Length: 426
Image 1 (cartoon, helix red, strand yellow):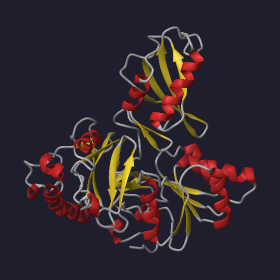
Image 2 (cartoon, helix red, strand yellow):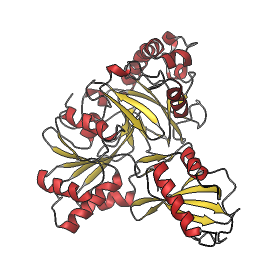
Image 3 (spheres, rainbow, N blue to C red):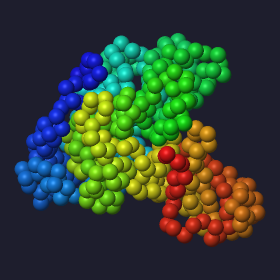
Image 4 (cartoon, rainbow, N blue to C red):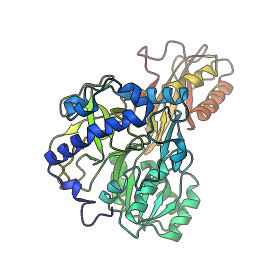
């Protein structure tokens, strides 16, 4: 559906009680469908009476499915672990995301439900949009592409990297908007200024795949670009999105979202930070109580923009140690794989921080003979060669560049952390 005016459709402004009644009315059928069509949920929900799940209280009694279980199921029963309700041959596209996690997209229009979020960000029919999410293997580029085309926008499938070619295309096509990670828009605008190529046609952006830090949002505003975020995952599609009111993230109309205490399925009181758990009404991939691993909290009341659905405070970090760096998830298991490749490393801790407006990660490695100061060290035997070799492994395993710092044994905190997110989200 293509929206008119301020709202995408009438669903956004429903009376909250009417919305809740509609969601709860749809829930039993979705659970019954998941049990019938998706073998994994037939097993997970085997003792559940679908017809009785007509309230959030009843839903909260169902098991939570976590990404680790999804990955284990896919490894045991490729390609999708029995979580999809359609056969792989009925899909339009199949994806392989970091983890590894495997997903599908069917031919259902706006499969990922991103059009609503894009409409809220100001995108309209006939506009050219420069899409800088990756189209390679993972679904990022396709999630936004589908929503843009549903709105009637023209998409430049730019993908990631090669900033010089990107700004040449922008100068030629004069897109009105940008979609991509928050950081990469700055790379593009800076490259355009460096090359003397005009990128000023971009006046709006919808970003995801990383935190939009306040300082970066303010910089974009000063450069004439209004930037709003949407919160999406490759499993669920769009979960929530910002509106021009800039008062939290509004939950999409196609999901039932809960906030639970991390590591449990227990709902937390309104305002308390917990893990985002979502049940999708997508019949092709009917995920029931799927834990995202992301932290957030419910904001009281409705958005000043007039949309009445539940609001989330925004992305507030990870419930586990999985961390997103430059739009890519980095898992503790990947850090373990790097360490396994280098027997000199006794223990390691990946620290993610910010350098200006860019994510940076540094792998701190305890190595015998390294300087106890924690500075980058050649004190360990073959320190420079080892640092380079570990950096190569880090890039190969995580698909991201990172620094390496050698420290003395015992220098890292004894707190069980393998990944430390040292970025400030204030």
